[in-house]
Image 1 (cartoon, rainbow, N blue to C red):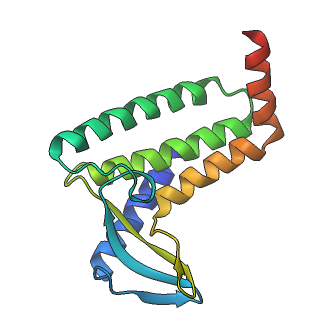
Image 2 (tube, helix red, strand yellow; image 1 turned 90 degrees about the vertical axis):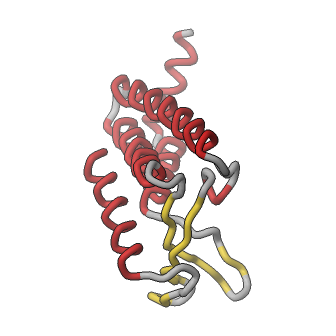
Length: 152
């Protein structure tokens, strides 16, 4: 699942790079555009890495987080936890691999309503959000965290 998620993310980013122009929206549905953009930071442009050293530090921190998620994945007792951690790892790796060449992550999904816009995002971001939602909403994932708390 991780490899498939990473592949889907990277393929959609390559398609966006090949077919879209920066800041030139292409309408695909009401309130949804494809708009090529680039993000030097983490979620929605927060904490931008504005130098090669900043990018290296960000990649190092992200690598540590992926290692931690892999540790949780290996110990997840239920399918819901394995799927959730797999989605989180796939999304994180997709964005990390995209960031390596130039310090930027490719974003292209643009949601809006009238004058309100959500920050542009990509498939990796969707995978991360789905993984977090599954961890929060899954009774088995909640039971897993409760049992770990009571064991300590």
